[in-house]
View 1 (cartoon, helix red, strand yellow):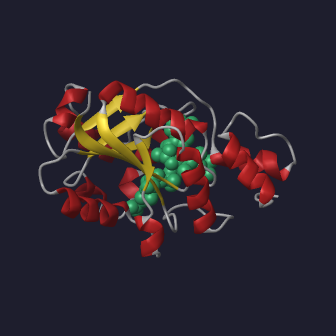
View 2 (cartoon, helix red, strand yellow):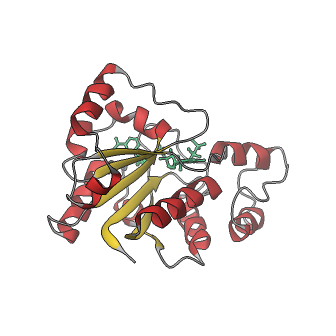
View 3 (cartoon, helix red, strand yellow):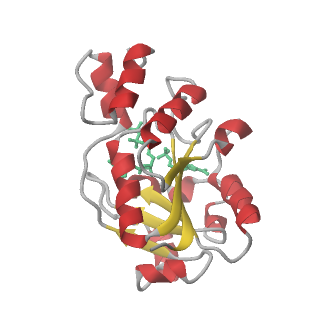
Length: 213
Ligand SMILES: Nc1ncnc2c1ncn2[C@@H]1O[C@H](COP(=O)(O)OP(=O)(O)OP(=O)(O)O)[C@@H](O)[C@H]1O
Ligand SMILES: O=C(O)c1ccc[n+]([C@@H]2O[C@H](COP(=O)([O-])O)[C@@H](O)[C@H]2O)c1
């Protein structure tokens, strides 16, 4: 069974790991959106320049995809180049999808807490819903600007996200996985194993290309 809505998950994916992938499949299993696109950014807005090339981060996301037909990778931010502002991506997607289809932006609590620093942040909700997922180490300590925003837009049930194209926020608790890209980069730098933190083909790619050394 599929329900209305396209889910997207943006990220630096430097590299993609099982925390990202498990988030994607748990959301799809719970809400049956028609698809979930992973969208690697070209240039993250509030992070240091990634240590590997955009094309290599994209290659790793493609390698991680194999096996679940509901997942796909969307290279529009890498093709666009420049700073990867979410509002630009969501505007593009909204034009492609038309005005009525639900568009759900999945993001971790850490990313959501930084929302008031994003480009044109208050307009983003006109184009998509926010589905905010739990992440170990991050509590929903909402600063006042964000708590007022949540009061305005918080959904009473997750199903509201399937009944409107945009404009709602839902918080979802997922299986806690304390994995991060920075942890994986740190292990690789020390020449320690990164096995079981990310898909094996991605691990092999990192080893073959000697990334994060
Ligand atoms: N283990 C996880 N559990 C839940 N959400 C996650 C997890 N890891 C990343 N995310 C979410 O995935 C999105 C993309 O994350 P990103 O590519 O920046 O990875 P990261 O692990 O946070 O990277 P880094 O350690 O370099 O900061 C963000 O919304 C982030 O909150
Ligand atoms: O648009 C912005 O200003 C903006 C600022 C910070 C993060 N984002 C987006 O949020 C998503 C998660 O970002 P990050 O930094 O956790 O990898 C990813 O799609 C980023 O492009 C977007």
